[in-house]
Image (cartoon, rainbow, N blue to C red; front, top):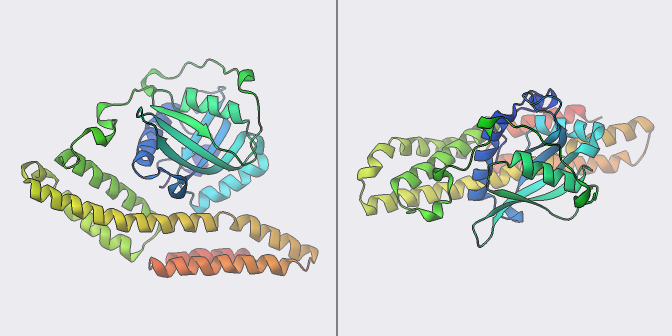
Length: 319
C-alpha cells in the first residue's frame, strides 16, 4: 500500500491540514481492512507525536501515516529519527477485526522512542476521531514506557467538517451481496487505484498488462446492473485472478521497500568507516552488495529496469 496525497516535504514544512488529513486517512484505513490483516501481510507506518497541522497552529497532536515508503520517505524518516527520535515511531502495521465487528489498527514498532501511551491516546482521540478504529501497540521497538494514567491531553477544538462519522457505504462488504454490481464495481476501483500507485513506482511489464485488463473492466461497469448471475460470477472470477497477480506485485514491492530502507544507514556507516581507515568497512560493503543483488533479482521477477537505476544511484554514494 502506497502513501497517497501526502509528500515528505509536506510533513517537514507542516503544510498538512487536519481536515484534509482526515479525508486521506479514512480511505487508507479502509484499504487496510480489505487487504492488510495480519503481521505477515502488513504495511509500514510513520508517526509524529508533536505535529502541528497547518489549520491548527500551536496545537500538538499525533499524525499517523500508513503505507510503504518510497526512497524520498525513507530519507526523510531517517533524518527525523536522528533529529527528533523522542517524538517519532516507525514500524509495520495491520488491521484486525473482533467478533463484534470492531476494527483495531495494530502497530509493530521498530524505531523511534516516542512515549507509548501518549502516542496511543493522541491517535485515538484526534487522528481516529469519528472513525471506527482502536489502536493497539505491540511489544518491541524503542518506545518510552510512560504511564497511561499520567497522560492528560489538551482539549482541542477540531474543525467541524473534519469529524465525519463512517458513511453507510463504508461498512464492511460482508453485510452486502458479494456478487452485487456495486460491490464488484467498488472492488475493481480499489484494484485500479492500487495499480496506479504501482505504475508511479515501477514501470513493470506485469503491471502494464494487468492494468490494460482492468481498464477494459471499467467499460463494463454501466452494463453490470443488467447482467445475469452467471455473468456476475464470471466477472468476479476475473477480479479474483487479477487480485492474485496484484498481491504478488505488492508482496515484491513491500520486500523491495524493506531492503531499501536500511541502505542509507549502511552506506553512511560504511563511508564513515572508510574515512577512519577501519578495516571492517569491507564487511559492511559485502552486506550492501548482497542487498544490491536481491533488488536486481526483484527487478528480474517483475521485469522492471528502473530498479537497476535505483541501485546505480546507491552505488554512487558508496565509497
